[in-house]
Amino acid sequence: LILKYSSPNFTSLSEDGITYCFINVVSWGREEYIRGLSNSFRIGDCVVIENPLVQPKDSEKEERFSPSTSSSYRLLVSENFSTVRSCCNPEIETKLLSLLHLPIKDPQDYYSLGDIVHNGQSLNGNFINILAAVRSVGELKYFTTADRRKGQRCEIKLFDETVPSFLMVCWDNESMQLAQTWIPRETVLFIADVRVNYDGFRNCMTSTVNSKTIITTNPDTKEANLLFSFAKEYTEIGGLDDDDPEQANEVINLHSIVDVFTVQQIKNKAKDNVGKSDLIYGIVYAYITLLHIDSDVSKLIRSRCARCKYMIGTSGECTNTSCPDGSMNSTSIITSFDFWVDLSDHTGTLQSCNLVGSTAEKTLGYTVDEFCSLTEQQKTSLKWSFLLERCKIYLKLIAAGNARSGVRVNLLSCKVADPEEASQTLSAMGIC
Image 1 (tube, rainbow, N blue to C red):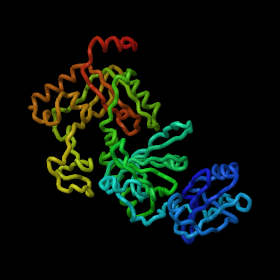
Image 2 (image 1 turned 30 degrees about the vertical axis):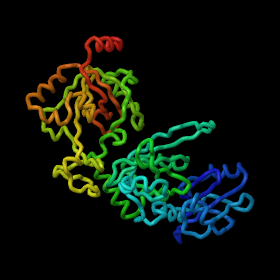
Image 3 (image 1 turned 90 degrees about the horizontal axis):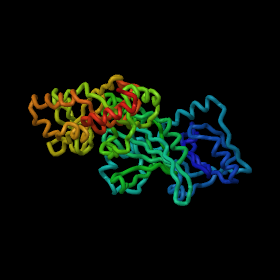
Image 4 (image 1 turned 180 degrees about the vertical axis):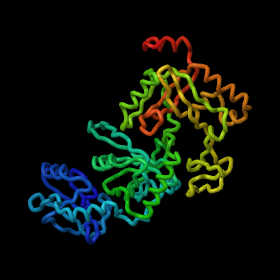
């Protein structure tokens, strides 16, 4: 059973369904032969290897560049004497495929994401094991190096009970293809021998899949099952409904957003993008038709732990049971606006649009503390100053079948529109 695949050297890791051991397989030969093997098999394929040469493994070299194995040997596949072919025995395949969900390392031997973050640069450059759930799978990004070699990369966001977002980067085709099969918020990974580094540009710890890394998808272990249950419950209560914390403070140049839409055009665009992760940016001239800022303040303001960024419960304590802060105090709590608004124009209504953080502060003209000091009459007056006016609203959109309007909408900016500007823009669109 192939667990790891690297080209062009055709290095794979095999797993024996009876003795449950791991061994590296290396093949050397003509470029045509190696590329043929490389294109013939993928991670999870069951293969029969005939006439391999059994060699003692070079422990020092293999520990540096190859996946860790329980065997003292390795298999050398020769172009002239060996054969690698697909296994066609359904009974054997069934037994072997069940092993895909067993980690190659001790299932209790791993770092939590919180351990990595808190240990910081002391782990820089180390190869460690991680157990985490998939938060998001990014699109493939293509690049060209200084010497004109083309490449691609894929960024995966992970989370667990201790950290809401942690970056893992894939550079090789096999791991990137494997990543495309992961379902965000429903997939748990045991990642053996991933390299962790301090990223000076991002000012945080990150991880990188390398030639040693073996990723076990949805491991059949007690620890993984507990994490899966946490991920499911945390998702259901809306713990991941916000934008990625790493992107929460992203700076978007509003001047680069020039496309103007009606509400109906936004809904149509969302339908065309169902199943895609593409972000859509645009402008809408609309009225805010739902704005409950004069309601219970607890429905408008969200409190998070300053340490781990998890929600603060009604009891005033961090909802993350693994949070190192434990008892909370005013200095370890971050408060921010987080509420929904409805946007309407002559073509329809976008329900439950998210207005959060600094965007909400700029829109309302008050910080959280200042807003909390307003009287109910002042809040009501502020509310009606928006309900009676057409606004120019910059939006970030992503298609979401489970959203009320079929699209998740985040407001990037909201100001009362200049009447002349709005009239000219809408007239140019053929809208009176």
